[in-house]
Amino acid sequence: MEAMRVNCGGDYLRLCAGMKPGGPEVKACFKRNRQNLSPGCSGAIAAYERSRAGSSSEADD
Image 1: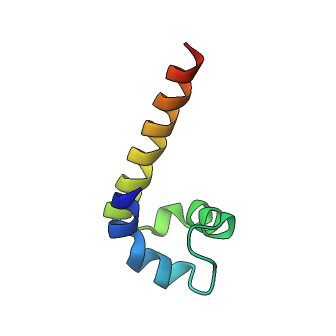
Image 2 (image 1 turned 60 degrees about the horizontal axis):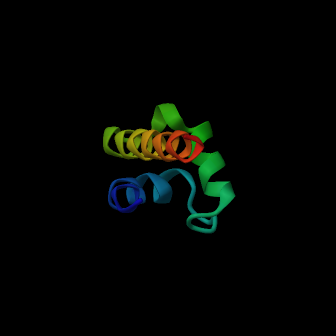
């Protein structure tokens, strides 16, 4: 989560300013604008999603 804060701040300001930080609107905004995100932000989101997927499958075991 910290990596997203560090790497996605500029993308948030550029693409999703005015939305509540961390809210569902920002998540939807980033998803809509995925192709326009900086490489650092895209990487941070991908890493976060991988970690969440891993946590979910581990919880099911």
